[in-house]
Length: 157
Image: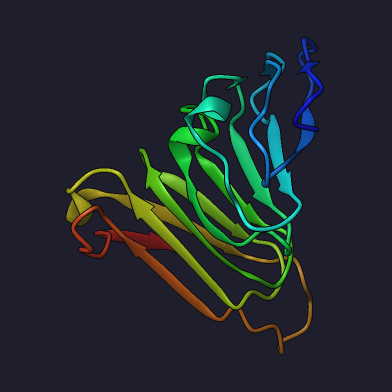
């Protein structure tokens, strides 16, 4: 959806999907709700600050299984504090700010969450491990760290 624009002005939840392979060229504004989700789809992530300037108001970021690489959180909006994987893949989130929630919806190969700050010992992350009822779901490797590769002080599962 890199060439189209979206504005969700309702108080409900907005779920808007954009390509991870091309920067947004139009403004994409979430609604006034508190659970607005931006979904990345399409392949290797190539988003830049140009998209970050166009995307506003989202609290959640979800990535499809076919999205790979590192997602610099400054390229998808400053208000996101919930990250979600929607399929089995390898993804890294960098420059994550504040206390964050990571939802691993299904089995994953590798997920990395790198905070923007260097205060890992005082940072917190909550990790929710999927909705599958099988005890054979493998969430692979999950790495959480600050900008200096120091692990986080609190990990809630």
